[in-house]
Image (cartoon, rainbow over the protein chains, first blue to last red):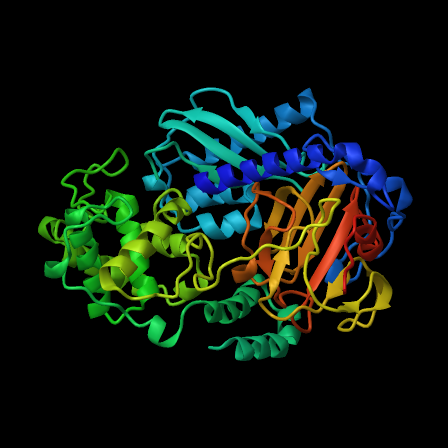
Length: 184
Length: 352
């Protein structure tokens, strides 16, 4: 997990370098003039595409519902503060080793992604070393506006919480609580 | 169960699935996922006499620790467990004690003892039982054996369900060393891949896709079985937008990240109906969406950084699907666009 993440970041750096290496050759691209995002990813000129209009009904295979386009959210002070508050709220609910499993899960599970609800349901809260937050959260990765990594200090050390959201209007849900090194 | 019969179960189960709860879906997922773990002779338990462990070091574990690993392996063998189960036992003991018979616990469990840091709550026997490598491993494996769907769980999740520790993903980082130790001590090739401690499928490795000059990758090989556009749904019969392109790659064949980005959704019930889902955010308002994988075929996790052409999944048939295929979708500011046209502009021909 720690190793994988390092690899992932290294990969991003490698690609960034690779893209930077050919940035001067954009005239060789035959059909589009990609504009790099802050992460160095090559994105084609989006004005050349015609996405489905809002209100279009989606079939079940595509997830159902209707198209409801929302511009990608951008990080600003409010967005950051919301993400940090969501991380602190989730960790506050998580760090309750004094509760019964039933009470702990009832409070925590609504704050989790569906995948995390599966993976964390067997945790015995008594084995959680943290009892309370010991300070404010800090965003440590905001390279996407749909997934964020927040470090939050506790009485047992600093946790890293990964949260995701569907779009800018949806709540942040916790996907992962990585405990301080030396605890598990 | 072999892959073919897994696929058959999936096809038959689809009508049931539509009406079923998520639980029903997970049963289907389970039946499909055990097939990617070692079967037959490679899964049978392996054996090593602790007295014959050589004076060597494997993955940083010295002789005394390897002898303890041998006791773990033997305890699993004597319970007729598979080599994957035995390796899960070694992985767990690595994570709990570094393969040392600890006579102390930790902050959350001051009473924890031994290779598996078992508590003094009566569930794990007497103090001498918990301090005995073979007996403590036997008690670990007895509980592991009650998790009948463990071949459909990642090794770290299976271990976590025995240990009920605070971080379900904790043990994954010990998996590769556990595979090396079990193979090194027994001389057997287990058919277990490294890097799979947090994945259901321990018998399959991952590959890398080809990246275009523009830095994009073909998400999956195979012909187009259904294009983007308005259509009659083959199951519901309703006329609506099919918001992606269906690529008919075979069951379990690789799915690659179309571009570098961050995984922002993964799993089931994450905004794309009952389909097994991965969403990657590439920035600039562009996301790519990959649907229909089984739980066992989702190889990435939320927040993970992926690079163009990195394998992220295996093709499956979960959710609203009548057979193994990848439904690939490109979203621009939350609205789907024709992925074939989009990918063509970045040098990728889908269905080619």
